Image (cartoon, rainbow, N blue to C red):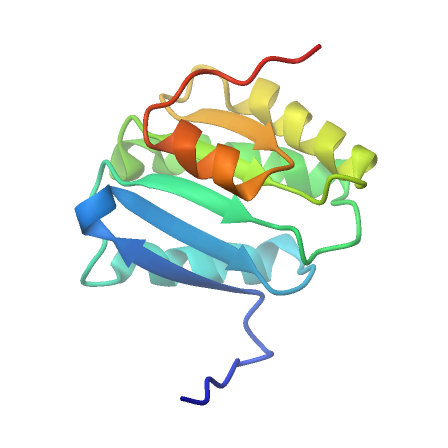
Length: 140
């Protein structure tokens, strides 16, 4: 099977209702506007329902998001929290991307109080396990 990727879209997603999970895969860095358009498509997808946890796999993105985009992302989360439901949202970055991890941690702080629990990860399997109700990550 050959899969085609629309390079004009900054991310793809798959919805797994049986696992109460959405996996978002960022294909490349994109401005906030492109990301929010892709997320609008997700929220209007027939398979989307409130309460599905999210794993945002950003390991393919090498650039660090600008602080302004992280702030816009946080506002978006606050504005869409009632549609998303009280869910866990795991952000996964490359293990070597310390600055991107730091910006994901900023996103954690900025989304506090939204009803969405955001956490940064460098391991995809740990992020999936946490999103499924696993233990909070420990920061040593």
